[in-house]
Image (cartoon, rainbow, N blue to C red; front, side, top):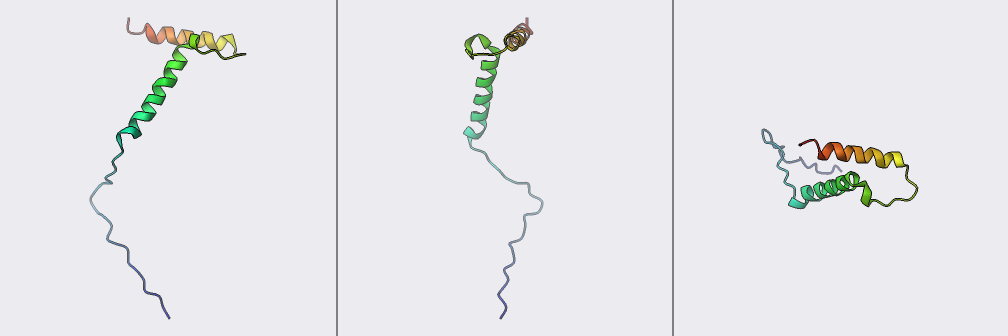
Length: 71
């Protein structure tokens, strides 16, 4: 005995995919990126134990370059 086959509905042709994201799907990654960027640019506030002083110096130079670029 054979089972009935179901044909899939007709595919949408000529139309793009209509995908809408909620507002927070774009806002949350942007806020996380901004928070991490601020932590990197302000190494004086990060109190990590046992870090290499060269890394802090590198971040301070990057901060100096970024903040004084527009001047």
